[in-house]
Length: 266
Image 1 (spheres, helix red, strand yellow):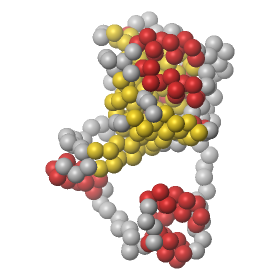
Image 2 (cartoon, one colour):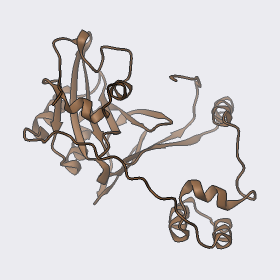
Image 3 (spheres, helix red, strand yellow):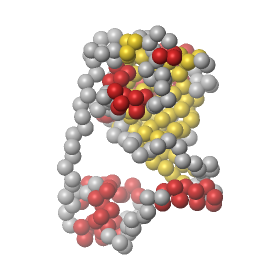
């Protein structure tokens, strides 16, 4: 198996270039989880998939940066884990400003990453799904408890872990809606946003397909720059918003006012 061995910070595969680890892994033909799994050195430790216990240990880290992403967005919030509610394969973190929905069946591999740099170290707990895509990354900050990180790394270290093997996401066939007139009538009578997901299941629709089914009475296609315009308008007017960024294993929610709006990244 290929490995990546580190002699010093300057040659570390994760930070030797300006590229994000996700982009570097893609350039090398790996998933990000595979890139970590192939690292040969103490900087990366594979953890046992004792997911509820790991989640419940996260509050000991103190203030952290929680990062959730998908192909369209990267979402970062600084806060402290707490008010954790786990129920089987689902979980909630409701400790403002952290507001997370956890789909734990997709938490397939977990790593503790401790990369030395000029200012000390970059420490994080990183979780990936079966395809090796990041679910959530919990980055330590200057005020975080480094000893608690080391305790998590030691407690959950998986000395017998098998090499990580990617399982590509299954290709899902598009759902076929049933009685679309009934769906539109039910949608028009909806009084609570939480009624929407069960409604979709009853009518055999996904969220994207439901937009086509609703028709012009409820849905209009917007220009691609509408999202940026909305953010600028919310900032200028001091209007509170909610922003959801999610993937298969985690949905991270921001609630409040946005201020500085600027384009970053590609």
